[in-house]
Image 1 (cartoon, one colour):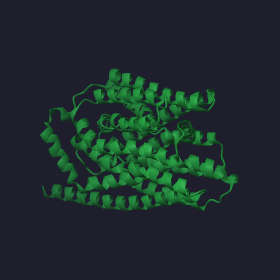
Image 2: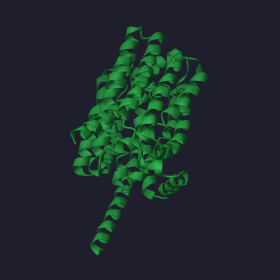
Image 3: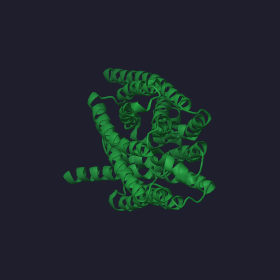
Image 4: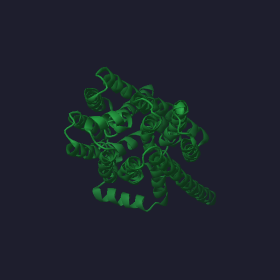
Length: 419
């Protein structure tokens, strides 16, 4: 029994470390936005297009990845994902040009999604029963935050040691790439090569299950909740550059925010998961989070244009990031809240990710265009207003799903009483 528990937590640790590393490459702009932009010599809109190219392929691949996760061994899928992503990162670190870089981001859309993301969600859900889903996903997000933080500070140390220029950015990217490859080998040796239930299903049965998922109203509401929450999460990466370009903060401030936010991720993920399991509803915690984001983003819009308030901006950033990471740790855990069978997890998470992560396709190019077109604060104010609108919509979707869950529970209770 003790060996089984120990193996479960070792598996969760490897899953979390890997999740903290693999997305640092396609989302490198969140930490090294300004230095990377200068090294590549591209505009804000082009930076956004790189992310949009990744997101366009990723969005299509989530749908495919859900079927793949329900069909094949997660050990093999995860190992391939880390090693291939790391190799592409090593090539990207040579800055082969804007066109080739766009291709690399597109390929990352395959290696970090088709063979990785739904497999990660399924592997995590399989680690605990219904009463443990909050803490499993919470600890995944929390440990992922610690992993993120350690990696980002290591990358920053390399960047700073090598002069904070092109050479520094190059080796920061290589540090991340090598780390991904190492985790790939660890996944092969330490994650159990179990045969998922999907291995016994034919392609016809898998597609039939996908059709069943598409017909579920609850699944589409979950898609909307992930869409709105992820929209807010994606905007966090612009707040560091906002402080640099509008308030005159040093570039290092943006990088430090990018690194320390992962400490907040660790705390928010763990506390959010434990709190959600304690009150028995991951969805209610998510809904409270939307209110917190409205307050945080509203504060950015009310702050005066004065460099002396940078400390207040940083405090607001950390409070908002804490709320976002609590929410992000739980939005896949609400699949269990909705009462969806575990055998459909890969397909549900694939479809939910496909729809929920579509902000990646348009949002970064859109926000980059706002910033390029409107000098000073105005472009960023449009960004914060967008985040507030998403939070209002997300809260409304949460109310609808909560009502549907209550109706389903009443039907189950009535049926049980009748029997």
